[in-house]
Length: 419
Length: 77
Image (tube, rainbow over the protein chains, first blue to last red):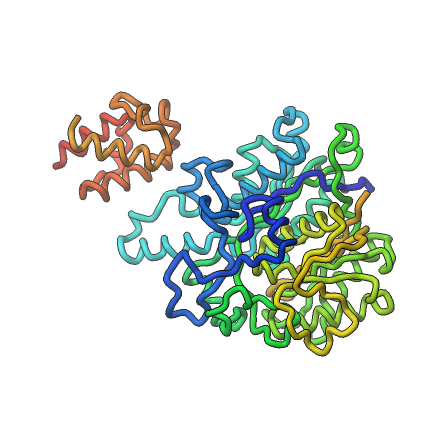
């Protein structure tokens, strides 16, 4: 089987418009949460989110750098974030000037959980208030989930597989796993893979709040709201942004002298077959996806030093994932560290698995694991697990596991190692 | 320059993201300003909104340059 390595990283998050700014802020224990600025949420149960900051902010995002003004006007923000993250990743990999032959073997697999919800909401209002003749001609292709892959392929002339995963909050991890398989199966030599989301809009916040998924008890202290594993956690904080990696066939990368961050060695996926929003009561789906990734990786549990947990800060989800991790790791639990970076940037939904996989890679690069913020009073079941409370921790990191679980009972786990 | 021309040009700059100097009256939306057919649909909608006129599809199809747009709008006002 052809080996697959990561040679480029890109991201847009509530803590930065690129990889290095975000990572610096993550390691410095900063939080991207605040009162929602984009619309007046004062009448909503949940009034907070981790929004991507405007360009003039200390760690804001400048869309104009990589995305044409015209495209910005026509498409939803999740596509803008995706194009920007893909551009950063491709530049990082040194692959912006590929020959036509190379571009025939380079593709995109960048998905989203929800897609263009803000635009669906606003154009529905245009339809209701002004009639069908005022709906934008760019409405459809400016909201479709596969239009990040579409736009990126057009921008860079990538003629290989053009694909987009839609598996709710597992999207980012599935995108990377599936794209890695496309390279392994010889469908392509290079794949841009990841996920993006931007659903912080009235209908998005209202909908997730009605599903009882969002934190509602920390509206006056937004930075304290995302608190995975803490006994006072009460739901997730909505984030937004994008994460994209460049995956490349190992020999292809080696031949051109590329900087190699990590190898994707294990990918596991499973379904809970239980409930649309609640995880399986014994965490069986998550357990099986981790177990499959481990089996495929050929590693032993003792080799895995860091787990970037799904850990969304919901009362049920955190506990069940923790239980599954404890069951899987057994006696090896005390040699690994596990944290949830959602404590800092919120839950990026379809972007989460990709952004968090990049954090895993940076943990290996810098030999430091990011913290779980706000873990003031760990729940009883946290005993014996190093959840890296409050501050980042320098430690040996040789191989990493990233978990992503989504509505519908869809689970993905990725294992990567340094080479 | 007429008031209509000013307002048309402003809309074109905003929608197509082109520099104001490029939006001359002779400029073709497709050949000179990088628009595609959907961009023109959007521009026509914006003109209708801005000037409170109706531009039917058969008339919209004949609007190829900035001047075509200005003339059509002036003829309806």
